[in-house]
Structures are given as C-alpha cells and as structure tokens.
Length: 143
Ligand code: RB5
Image (cartoon, rainbow, N blue to C red; front, side, top):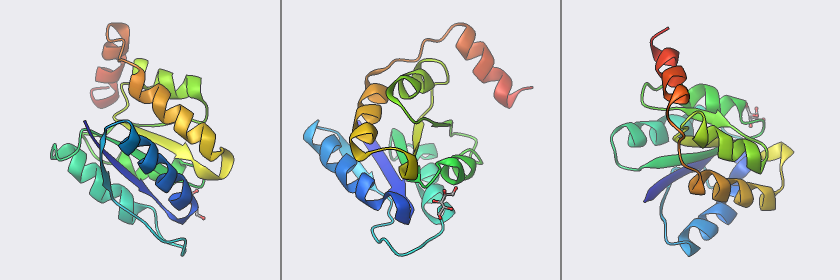
C-alpha cells in the first residue's frame, strides 16, 4: 500500500515521525512536503496529494496542519477525496469505519506525536463498515 503524506509547517516533525513509523511497518510512502518549518500555505501541499490519490498514484493519504481544518477543506475540494479530521484513536478508527475516509487529517497543534502515530495505526487497521454508512456517503455527493 502506497500512502501519501503532507503537512504545513506546523506538522513537519509529526510528518517525519509518521514516515519512519510507516516505513517500519512496510508501507510505501510518498512525501508531498513541506519539509521546512518556515511558514507556508497548506493548500500548496494538499492539492498535489489529493491529485495523486485521484490519479491512483497513491492509495490513501495523511495530512496535518495546525487545526486540521485547512487541510481538510482543501482536500475535500477534490471529488475523489474523503478527508476526515480526527484527534484521538477512536475518531481515527470511526472516520474509516463510518466515513471511509481516504485521507486522515490531524491537528498538529492539538495532539502529541505519539497520539498521531496511534491514530494512523487505528485508521490503517480499520475497515469501512459499508451498509447504512455507504448510503450516507452516497448522499454527500448526491444530496
Ligand atoms: C497555520 O498558522 C495555520 O493556519 C494552519 O496550520 C491551519 O491550522 C489552518 O487551518
């Protein structure tokens, strides 16, 4: 499984830790930046990762910014993206089980790096539950 990962300046250290974790677990990782702690604009990193997921170049994505909201808003502009914001392990699991999120978004300014790793683990191990949740997802794009 190939996983894309991106962040703005607030999530750079989280991103590095997550890349090490994912590589250690045998995932392929594509880093969409940023790799600097200089202030930057989260859409510059969200859009290339979203496009790569839509093109099938990576299977899923992880994104971080200060609150997570900027990344989630930018990513969800793309038709092929369901980016879900989570801030603990249970929400990370549910965002896959209930929302089939293909991007996990995390708020770097409000979680620890250890929590970020545990959330990524929970999200990757979870399976979409389908059924009534698929009906609800269908209604997102077809109101
Ligand atoms: C950066 O200061 C901050 O605005 C950004 O990381 C994010 O929280 C935006 O939604």
